[in-house]
Length: 214
Length: 249
Image 1: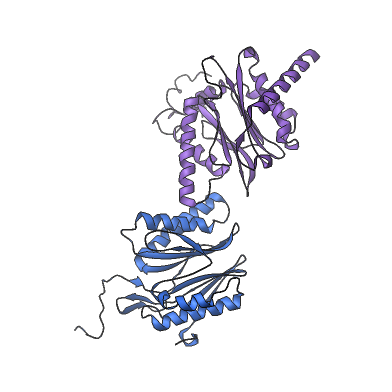
Image 2: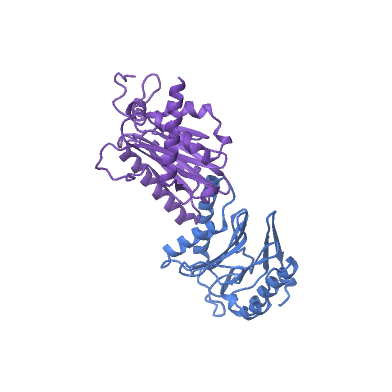
């Protein structure tokens, strides 16, 4: 019964070995992610959405254990919701990032979660916060994460420019994520993009056939 | 105002729908030293009177008006130990808020939290209600200048001006006589000291200290206490005005 070609432990941990990316451009924030969720070599979800809603203009990109990151995102979404209602105005991105950080640090021994928080608020505009394993927090203008990110540091470092236009940013993110998916076994599927501006959110889906590198 | 049997416990309503223990707690605030808060054109002021009942007391100790965050002031009125317990809770709430949300708490949120806190003691027989109230002055970029008061019942309101303590009626009539929203904080100092001096008319021979704090553009939007000489000057001017008013009568 055991097919030696495919190893699949149905009770194995599901990981978002992944490629996630966020960049601030002139006018907003662009988020990109691949769509592969794996359990060992088995692709549990080939069209996953790793860009989670935290608040109207705040998103989190998840990498590491799918269970850990989904649960943390669920708690933080709830805390931000209650907080924003009490505050009576949009929450700060830094608030969402701090809530994630407190979680990741407090439970650092039990979790396997690395998160990028990206969003816009009326106080400081677009912001990106990296929260690696362990619970540290860094703010940056652009950020890549997940197992696929290791393959594209060179590409990103050499091609990133501050204050790109939306088209330039879109090309940058699509190429970078696509290159990572090309080389990383744990990343693949299609690319999801989310564009966050002051006025609205736009989601885009780039199917496999339209990837720049296949 | 005798409770006739329905005033033994805070967990009992009277047939008229009153909770006497809460009313008695409010009475404890009404007989204590006056505190007043005013929103002026360019900021918000808090002021308190303190009787120096002994020559052995250190000047300016036992502060009635404290800073919570950089931009929030809390003035205490009523039984001061009760008030300090409320202040301690406010400090914890503010610190936790900053730790959890990475932004300082606002005046209206800390007011709500304190109101919920003191209200607990009017519902459960875990203790007695606080015999103290707090006035909260604050500034933030979104809400601007604000003034709130939390009372022992758990009521809280946002005010343009409010006063509590034994001189509250005198302060309120002075406040209503003048539109403070049209004068600046600096112009209001003398009116505040005048109100406080009039509040303790029958003790006018005793030594008093005054605390006044301000949040305004001039203080860099931080909650700061006025320097002693500014207060002394305001007191001297107020005493002159009071004397002239009395001669006029």
